[in-house]
Image 1 (cartoon, rainbow, N blue to C red):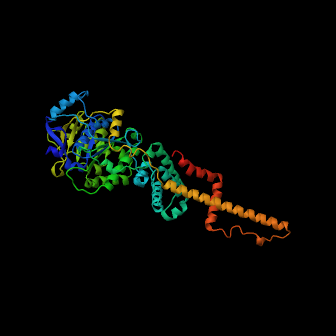
Image 2: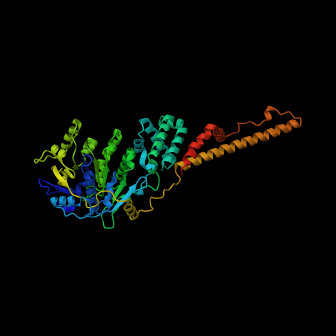
Image 3: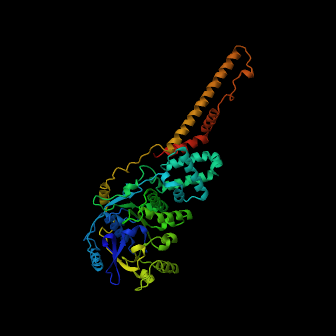
Length: 514
């Protein structure tokens, strides 16, 4: 094939001299990079990301170990692996030169890159329920809360908005149950506890504004190369459910917002999902079905998705069948279960009469893999033992000073750093509560003033010797409107110890830390 229309992955064949290319026009047919720890998956991901960038294709990937930050710096002849790299390059017919890749760093915690945020509304109840591991009943209550927010015009931007809304839902659960189905205080309380846990895991950093604009992920550098967007995930991996849900949300947003482009000559964007098993571990069928749907349809948006994982069996069969380009590094087979997984992995490749695929997957060394890359008309290529090419960018992490320099030069500095807190559900519901409390207090004061005047009037009549009949006394409640009666009730409730504690929990507790 024409090398200009593909990414050079490495050399295959008996002598490793047959070039293996990943065709750009079939890169949106998705792919799989698999292999045990330490077999070279990270380097394969690095050379593919740089290859897509060189072809003018933006890339999104997560950096779980910090090693992929080396994409931002050129490799060096001083590196300890320079000699072996040059030997490998000569063996596969590659004229190796060192070059950096245009990179933008992102970080959920805003420490190792530009802060990345979304809003609660954009995340939606399905992914939030998955993130918080809610039961079906609790997820139903969360769906009701989102429905109420839409009907009431309440913007859900951050976690305190959702917490305030859930308090409102709990207070009005009887009316909502009649309209939408059962809303129990137990379910509301369970969701609130999950939200507290999510905050403790750093989830509060994810939700808020300014929200991430997808256009900032689909940028080209000034020289026409695609921008490689690296999400710092070393700290994020401490909360694996948060990590997986965020990447799934990002993939869903790309699916929903990008226009249809059919089968382009090269992808509009390539998305690498590292540690893909975290996406599917314990996932409900509804979520797996959604991932399958997105993976099947997002190719028409010009987006290629590559799942990176230790074992192909980590990916559900229906999704695995959609991954046309495959790079399989070594799999270990020490147990019966390992051997079964190895056999299943080998069955997903087009046979090569020169070698046994199962043996090859077991035997390939570090930096070597069994590859099957799509050919013309999308036909899977014959399996090849491939020596993966060395990277042109730096192998290993960059320094903190180098990272800061890259961050300051992306043109996005200052756009996402300062968090914005505009009026949303929290402020609106807080204002309503304050108004109700003020109205109730005013009604109570008016009632007390009226009672005082009545007492003065009665005292004056008695002083003048007149008899005050029962019929001349002011009726206490006959003339009160429904709103006034409600306000009085609210005031009396707020005056109790429990009522005051409720106000501290909703308004004081939520405002604390702003």
